Length: 233
Image (cartoon, rainbow, N blue to C red; front, side, top):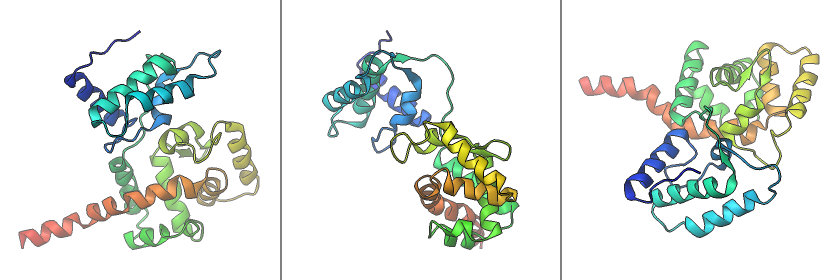
C-alpha cells in the first residue's frame, strides 16, 4: 500500500500531478475516466466504484480547498478502487495541444479560420463539404484518435473525451463493425473518416464540444501576429 503524508506540500504536489496527467481539472473537477486507468479493481469486488465515490463525498467535499480535494480524491481511489498500476499510461491532450493540432491542419489544408468557425456552429456542417471532411481526418490523425488503416481508436476516444453515455466505447467490436460497414460503401479517405466519426463515434458529443472549446484559443493564436505587428507600429 502506498502512503502519502497528509501535509500541505504533498497535497499541492498531488494536485499538480493530477493537473499534468489531466485526471484533475483546475476548477476541481475529476476526470474519472482518466484516473481510473491507473487502477485495477479486483475482479471479485463488485462495489469498488460506489465505495470509492462514497469515500470522495465524505472526504473531499466541494467546499474544501482544491489541493485537499485532489489529495483526498486520489487517496479514495488508492484505498477503495483497486491496485495502483505501475506502468506508463497515455495522457489526454490538453486544449493547448488540441489547438496546435487544429492550427496545423488549417494551415496544411489552406482552410480559413472563418470556415472552421462556421462549421463548428452546427453538428452537421463538417459532413457537407470536402474541406470540412478532410479537416476532421487531419485533426483526428494528428491527435492520435484515428488512422486510415484502423479507423477511430476506441480507447483513445474514451480517454480523451470520456463516454458520452454508459457503456459507450467499452465494446470496440461495435465501433469496428460500424466502420467496416462504411468501408464497404467505398468512400474516399476524408469521407470515410468523417462518416466514421459521425455515425460510429458520437461526433456531436465528443469532437464538436472540443472544437467549440478550442475556438477562442485558436482565434488568439491566429490573431497573435496581427497584434504583435500593431504593437510594433
